[in-house]
Length: 541
Ligand code: FAD
Ligand code: SIN
Image (cartoon, rainbow, N blue to C red; front, top):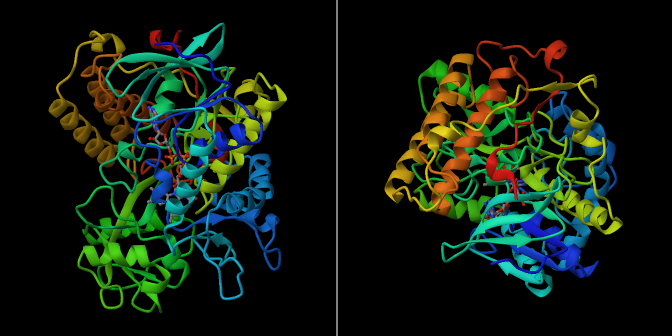
């Protein structure tokens, strides 16, 4: 089936996708379609806890301070212009979200309550329902998109970008009935989120499988910084997956970390890469698989964090009495599809915003609660740029690393990464790998990635991770016949590219730690690592 072309096709229904869809339809009257692989409300966004970092009260805070904290967390790799856009435009986007109906927590005078989180020099994080911020944002946006979008494709899986005459002209999708069809649009926004499901221990929901980045790689679109996977320091150590998160806001309120001997060992309010690394090092030294978050000193836990209190009750824990078992878990992908300051990718007609994108805002390590903000700010800019008639990316933000050429300061180009074993996979589009086989392979890939490409990596572990990814890809025929098989193939594609990038980056910086290169090496690596693979067959229209 081929539908009438849309002005804008949005892939994904998290904060980035829905913010763009609502603005494009409501303010500019564009014909917008939203296509998402689950129900509309299914997105990592709805799991977000701590809140949105934005300078809403000026004194003593300022956007300059927010900028400085973001740059410091990013370990030398943020694009300062992109961060400036984020901190300056963020407060306006938060106010628009409030106008749309999102209810944030307020004090008895009606002022927005502000929390502190790791890496922030002041409290500046607005939140909803204590630590249920994402659920409230998603609710408000889903309500709004139901009022405005022309077409909603739920339970529909975006498989491949359609490219014609050097521009993205739509996508090929797997519909709810299992049939393949095309959706054509003048502009396509990738807002497909992150890839925590690459790892066995993650806070991310099942849908976070990196599909957008894998699609972009197959179409030869530039991708960068994907070696920087942020591990959250305080996921509950518990068999359930995704791991329940114990928000950073708990540490902002005074909860402390303790090792196996009950000793404090790190400043709990450092940026999260530093806290997670300190935890992993301590766990290895003490031969344990978890540490402790001590929140027994917090007053009004139940009142301030009702949803976390409920998760803990369900796990049989009482935060007033028990130390809470925690360990780092894969949480956020700092890199992704390279964009300019308007969210334009290296392929005309293709835009990216939110966790799938590399706008340059996060560098080597994202500052807490900057992600929801990034989704809102850059989705808005994408829509405004389309409205202005922008056709191609410019050399701004992270895109400078692509367009300024090899001589540009701060650019490393990774050698091209091929699709792992496309030929070996062969296969026929209609051929189906049996579901139990897909689940088994996904589980194995996740466990091996945790082991080989997790918090601490080495050159040889990353070589082994690439081999593992190649084997997983070879087992899945392409184009895949089911969403589960397509997700596995995308995970394998991304696992391969991520391990490759992590191998090239022979240093430790931000969220990337190499045991064999323990120091930061500004001489060789204060640079964005751009991957530009050759277009694979599947990328053509
Ligand atoms: P998502 O919200 O992940 O949405 C992606 C969408 O794309 C989904 O609807 C998905 O179904 C769809 N999709 C994916 N692939 C396909 C495909 N092939 N075809 C069709 N549709 C597809 N950040 C903060 O700033 N503050 C916080 O407090 C915070 N807390 C967090 C707590 C947890 C537990 C987690 C996991 C993350 C948290 N984050 C937080 C990070 C933040 O939630 C995410 O980075 C952000 O929500 C990503 O938004 P997004 O719109 O880019 O993508
Ligand atoms: C948290 O609440 O700890 C998560 C915040 C984030 O990921 O930014």
